Each structure stands twice: as structure tokens, then as C-alpha cells.
Image 1: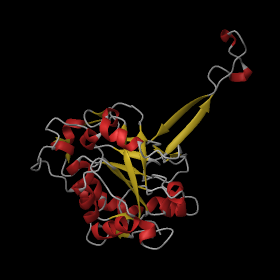
Image 2 (image 1 turned 90 degrees about the vertical axis):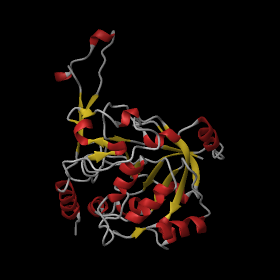
Image 3 (image 1 turned 60 degrees about the vertical axis):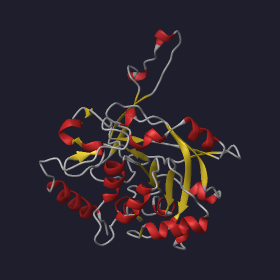
Image 4 (image 1 turned 180 degrees about the horizontal axis):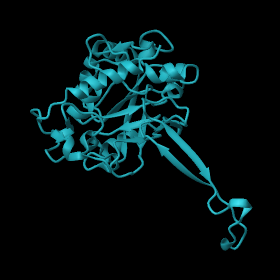
Length: 315
């Protein structure tokens, strides 16, 4: 069974209810002109502290390999073509001083596929985004005029993994299985994980390890994750970013009574906290890693809402 129609219908209802009038809004704690939210927490001091977590000299990619068959939130898709310009019929590029040949690639894609950074202009409410910015002001067809991910500085910080699959006593959590403040606190206490202001917090649910290859359709249409209350609790900890080994962070189908993907609104719009999706936490969990140095330099494409990423865990 797929829940894609459920997701689409829920979002359509939410967007249809958008008011033409701006709702009351409190400017960001970083100032009324701020556009980078929790990235303000990047600092030399936090970077130096994070570097102290490199004990073994190991590095691990947190991104997954993507392609045309990677499941994605509809109607997102990816198409890749490899071309050999001006080399039809076996022609060679003699202008190089030798008979050269080369391949180039052309990609047509939605950016929100696979491992990604959700920028602060991704999801809002009632026509409004982070720091009281109105959709009519920032949402241009040629790219966001504000809140584009190109403006986000490199995210370098201490990162922690909270193993929710372990907390629930399983390898892979079930679709729609959700967690909030009580479960997060219990998992952190049992696993001796602490979260400081400015940290990156990643939840391990086992979803990508257990489902991406074996059941890709289910992987891309349902997921375990945060409930609405859990997102509020995470925001209260003032992290730099919150992510998971799932494609959308929150539980789908949502907990009964919860708003669909409302954790995105809580984190992005209300608090300026970035979201990291499809983080490949499995290898780190198997290596016994609970904290590490997180380094992300995203593609600098002006005005993008999201960014395809492959952060590096150093430990």
C-alpha cells in the first residue's frame, strides 16, 4: 500500500487554506533581517571543539548514491544523459594537440532527491516563511530572492546520533512509528547522548538500511520519524540542524491528530533550524559512533530551496 495520495491530499488541503493576509509573526532572535537562522551558530569555537572528536582519523559519507530510480516525493524525478560533444562519427578533438575525446553530463532534476539539506525557504505556513518573509516577496520562478541555500555558510559542528531503532528494540522501525519528547529523552539517557546548542542531531531509525534496496516503493512513500510534539522538543534544544536516515524526517503516515510534515514548519519556519534528510547513519551506528565532527559544504546554486548533499562524518 502506498501513502503518496494521502501525503499529496494532506498538503493540498493545507496549501488551499493559505490566507491572503500575513499572520502575526515574531522576528527571528538573530534579527529581523536575518536569512540564515541556526547557521549563525557556526563559530570558530564550536569548530575547534568538534575537531576534538576526531580520535581515529576516520571519515564516513552521510549521503546516499542517487539516480533515476531513487524513490522521491512526487512529482520529483531525475534524468541523466552522458554526451560526447562534437565527436559524432568517431571524430577526435585534434585541437588539443592530440586526438582527444571526452564525456560530459547533462542533468535534469528536482533537487529534493536523496540526501538533502532543506533550506529555510522550503516549507512555511499561511504564505509565510522563516523570519516573517512573505511568499510573494521571495518565491520567484528563477530562484528564491531570499533564504536560498547558496547563502548558508559551511555547516561545521559537533554531531550526535540518537538510535531510535535501538530504543524501540528493533533493527528497522515501522512505517508511521513515531517518537516525541519522552522517547527521545529516554533514548538519549540510555545511550549517554547529550545535545548542546549548535549541535547537529541525527536520528537513526534503520529505515534506509532496512528498506531502500529491498522495498524502495515503501521506503519512499512511508517512514518512521518525529511527531509534532517531538519537533517542538527538538527546537527547544537549539540545534543547528535536525536530520534522520529517512527521506522526510517526520512519521508518514502521521500520528493521529498530527499535522502532516508540520515538524518542517516548526523547525524551518518557526525556528530557523535546518533539516537533513536521508542521512546514511547505518555505517556509523555499526561502528559504534555516537558523536563526531560534521562537515557540510553544499552546492552554491543561487536561489535554491534545497541542496543535494553528501556531508562527511569525521571521528
